[in-house]
Image (tube, rainbow, N blue to C red):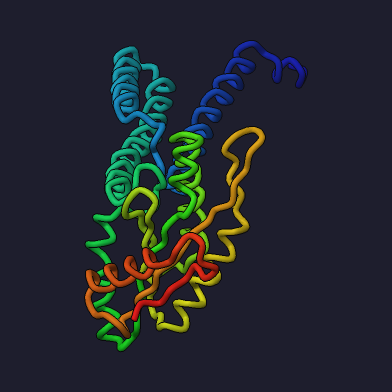
Length: 264
């Protein structure tokens, strides 16, 4: 039989199509698994859908055994392996994601007040054992309230989101930023004394002024902030550090040229 007839024989052709379909299915699930592992996110995946799909595959495999169609059995068991793997990943990462969501502020997605108040005392105790200084920065948005009143909730929220994103990006990995109240953010700086904390605050202030928030098609505004600082050179507990840093931030007037103040 000529080679071209063997290649394009009807049974052979449909076998190729079947192999291609199986390979495409395996490739699809492999890509999905790799994406989940890489991003550690399963937000848009439904565990219920994968449970039902997995049960369907088991039924198809059972049917294949009944009619003794072993290609159908093997194909469904291979697909079952991939879908079951995805289901396990969804259950695992969904639990991890739930824990992370509980730590985060809903609007800005930086850490929330509860997580900050739970974590910082532990960090302070660890720093003390290592004879390291620490600092807390209280950061207030100067133009959030005026923008909120003039342009509405969405415009005000844009300022907070931009500010939160900038603060988290501009800090070291072992520092911690949280949203405390409406327009108030706090930062825990690890291994920081008066001098280094002021350097960080100056950098944050300078970089914040470069951010332009688009609140309408024709209007952009700057992100204006003021920063109060307190280090463990002036207080020992988280409560004292927060109180002094917030007091320092509040004492900075809107008209003051200096937007940073170190607590006594």
